Length: 274
Length: 262
Image (cartoon, each protein chain N blue to C red):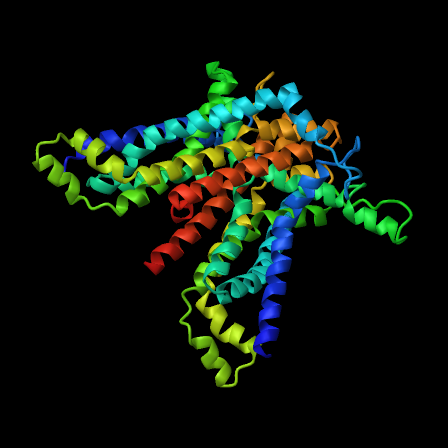
């Protein structure tokens, strides 16, 4: 540890100043916009106006609902998948884990576009439906909440699996066989042994998936369009279509508050553990 | 349940999960090869013309170059700022170290779309900064947290007394850094570069509002293109981008054991 504080500051400050001036300062000004009344001064009118519009309320609730649904589904699939991965031995485990992580490195636009191929008018699902004679004309599957839900789940599921795998690796090896030998059913093994021991992983994964879904832009833009708006796509519309910067600022504040509280929660868990 | 039944169930669950995660990529690879004027799956006839067309679309070429430039130079600048910061946070008794850490990490927490809008409203317009410059600054700030985190963790594993020994043997502090620290954290710096490059290249929300005439990053350009055309070229381009990421990750894994750093 070097004691020369001035030297240390000289090394650390450029990065901190860069981020504050070019990143945080403009964001702070933007957030203050919704608190400014018409004559200057402090006002909450922007927030009142925002939430009194039915469309905005719908979008707000839909965003929360989809976020919760995606996080919940990711937890269910994630537990099953993580349990299977942890059960694998040596080589296979590394390969499968790598295949789960890989999609995270690929452009989300490319990842989301695949769902247009699957759900579009001339896509696989509609091909099967019309081919089997279940429906005369192709169904509208794109621009629905289901499409957005599937896209988000595919995008963020790896984060949940990663968190749960690393949580499960820390379960002592013998506790599950021990519980089984002592007569516990698989259901009670899950609720009494696995769940309590992986709670942290679940919270971390769940928070990442939930906030990821809330602040996603690409998926609702491609798969939801203007029919299924979420907060980010609504913000984009408010700015680019109606030039409404007060609403944009309100949405920005909602997104930041949610993102920050999720981050605080994660930090708390991390410090409680160490 | 017997062991064989369990193993089978295990593989069925994994198979389904991986189909859901990776299957869509196989689909776009094939959809991009369909010999039709519109997107079709299963592909009707196989052709590489859409893959070839991607390279002839003028706007894709321009936006690819812009995205490449932002990803490379933005990440380099982030490393120039981030490596000294990581060093200071690790080796110096800094007043306000926690504040510095929080500020530098903030770009990960603030949703990108807000940053893009804020930069447009309060930097680009009033200060007459070009959109390209704003994109460059935003992408740099965005990558900075990854640079600091990855480099920090590889510096953390390096014992501090090695530099002190170098200084005692007559190196200046700076020489000790370039001759002792830098060679030892090379892997971490490279891993940070790759992670930063991929993050910046794939980034959409930050760049959303920061587009001007002729200035668009590749993913934004793809979003705009798919609104007006339904031919398989976006599928082909998506497949190519997926291959590019795979190649980068594969090479990085082979050379560095990349996954250790992420």
